[in-house]
Image 1 (cartoon, rainbow, N blue to C red):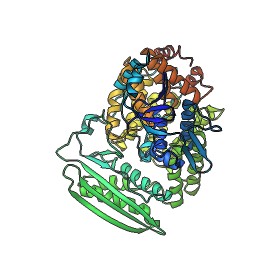
Image 2 (tube, rainbow, N blue to C red):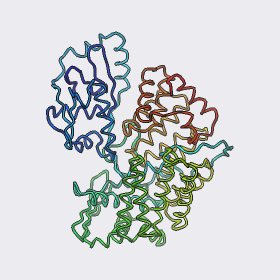
Image 3 (cartoon, rainbow, N blue to C red):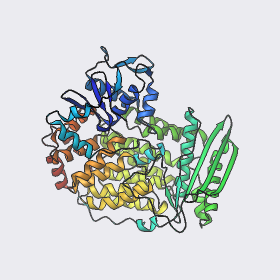
Image 4 (spheres, helix red, strand yellow):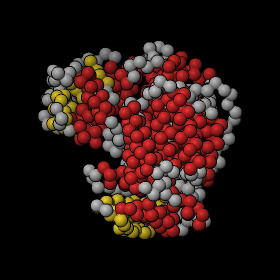
Length: 561
């Protein structure tokens, strides 16, 4: 994107900044994308929906994310909502950029380079600039949430040596790869969008249970550039695509299986069924894909995979809505998710996945100080996760939920046992590898985090922000601040509102001597959480290694946090 003159300011999207004379204002990448979208339609009213779709492509976020970006832009531009010289709010319609917009003149760069003290900063920013793709499927984002999405309870107990994962990652990478792309949906239809995501998630979960294939979650845009693509094996790689359409009381599904290298179509099918047959249709899709791939599985394994989570349509729809709300990671949406999961359980008291999701909402309450009695919330989360496991011990996600709660309680060894059980059921369960990776850092072994995260990111190439945060955090404790900053900035590009990521980024930048940049991140933390205190934050943080805790506190001591 070329630089633009916006009113009195020079907008440089590549540098994530605006400048006016000697004054330079750094902006968040998402704020820059919002400003670019407005500048491209200068003088026109741009709806909130358009700005959200362009700045957060493929990512579900709350309206607050856009509101915060607009607020930050106005502060940087010297604008206010009451006396607008740049961004004007149009009630119930959106926003309009009322300042003049023009291409930058040829001398703009030279002028900025001539500003005393600015040139070294600009060169530094330019040398470390990276371009990120913001899109991510709701399925992938929700999977990332089930990770170590929220930091967990701190434990001072002695941690014994944790066993290695039961699944050998090198063996996993030698298996045939099956990429399940997000099923297509009817644009603008929320229920059909949820159904499409449900079909995608169900097929990924079912196929992941079979040890003879390696299942890769959706690649919405492209694989992350720092993750090497899987090597082609003799067995070949495959891609599943599909589309879901609901018309009244009927549902139609198209599905295609192709050979990735040659593009040769191996199988395609169209299903027309009553909407009430949606679960048997999902069973049939799994059987057909496995049959075409000639995967050798026992009848027992196939029956276990085909068993749906519920046979109640209304419960299933509430479950899908709960998943979509949960990934927003705000207090209000967390409560919405809790209500949807609870409704699903009322409709089907044996809905194990709904109990597991409900457990996570209570764990989030405790982690984010959303309830005064965090201990009670965590006890409720544990009871719900155990209930899910008792209802159906053959679903890997319920083991993951229980492992997550164990980690909140500081019970790392128990968490690892549950994750091993999940991997035995689903060898391609990326989040299980990532949760194991996070535990290694929490217990003071960040070097062991790296290979586990590499495996997780090969299984989910278009990773969510938490995967990058886990890597960045590990590199921080390894003393590699350059790598830490690289991955933490990638995480922030995907979720600019994550406090933990910004905290570690501030710490790493401060250690590198980039004190102004560290102060910027500290200010961003204060905007997100005005009462932020590292002492309070650490009360719910799972780190058990005293040396790492001191390293972290020392790193931010001069930032005012």
